[in-house]
Length: 82
Image (cartoon, rainbow, N blue to C red; front, side, top):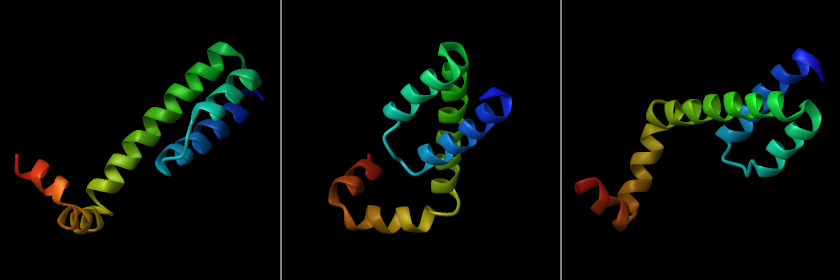
């Protein structure tokens, strides 16, 4: 626990979020491990940072992969055109 533990949780939770894994259990565990306030703060920071990193990966490093998947899916093509 402590500040090092909270920082480790934030980094790990951000990676968890980037991978698109379910977060409910992890957030509940943070509340039990760090208490309500620190668990909430750590989850908020980790989830926000993870979401931003996932967005940036999708827009930069994985943009070609996303484009190929959109070309294969008719529904996504219609959304892109609108």
